[in-house]
Length: 253
Length: 245
Image 1: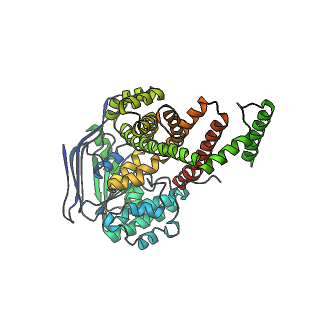
Image 2: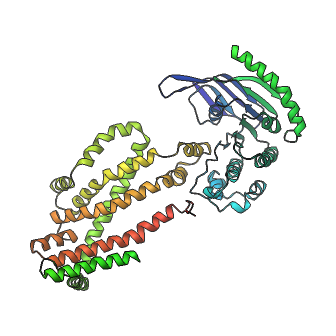
Image 3: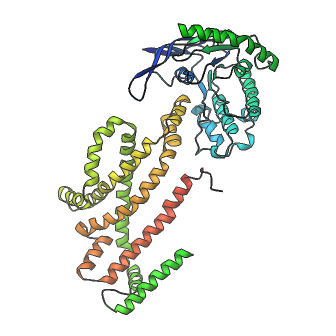
């Protein structure tokens, strides 16, 4: 079926999904992904962009190694230490913010110094609180802190900024840029928001409708994260017709 | 405060009824209290209650541990559930008395048989509750634990047990009261000591004072355990929940 492996530090992320099907509730198979091929250079930030319900989360779960039931091949960068931020924060409600972050650490690293990370994400005064007492923005920050605390070789984020108000989302995006630039971690980011993708990423992957595959790829010139609103808007205007043309072609193919 | 008033009212009604009837078959609170004090002094009451309490604790522990594991397995694995469910149905519908008789006949009139008989009576109840708990485990948290490579021990301790805690609390609360009632029956039928044995011999002598004094003492003991052990544990387990404003 598939073989997963991880290689040396500078290895890129390579994901090939020939086919991925689900059984729907009435027993009929539904094809979610077909013929998807994705390669992301080590240390770069890729954004996976697609319409809602196109199978983005499925692809991410496969990339995370959480779903071995697909036809294809997965090669993760580095030694395979994964950091992941799910769409919902997925914190343990019965553990404090600090415990939630520390529990993700490997045993030999349990006493790691989190001060700087916590500082960047503005969690300093909330470490002793329980997730039920946090706003969604703070819970998301905690989930991001958890993903970076494990010092991942490979970072996956599944629409981590949806349903936040724009100001908070924007601050969090800047924090994410700061953290990924500093750690140079290979990152795959899933979103349906083109502007967000252009702001954060240096490589864009556009997905078709179900069954999902990549219909267009685009590398953006550096520096990522520092693009002004004008630059983002003009890249967006340039991309939109390309995407809809590729969509139309993809629909025929 | 209302609790104290209502208890006081109960005792007052009892005292009034006893005074009106004036019969050996309904002794008043004072007579019962005097017997309790006398039996505590002689060491008889603490000894008999100790015997019963020991049986309650051992059979309760056995039923909870086995039931938690079996219930978890059945809640997590559909195959385990399919195979074990008919057994569970047999066990759950077996009258307590039948289990007790089987245990005494097959194992003998001894402590092992008594404790096992009670544990087997309580077991299916724990399994059913824990199976429900295991079915309700959040798959998303499971996935999170897998993605962050939690060790088995860490996953059980920080992800699984906190989710099962309310189910453990529910089955231990209902369990404690069921277990001590069945322990008395077991003692009545085949043990030479314990509260059940005392009640049996008092019954053959129509000694109502003694029956009431032991019954009341044991109820008080179980209430103390409930409020000093079970409730604080439960409060600790749910301390992360937001308090209602």
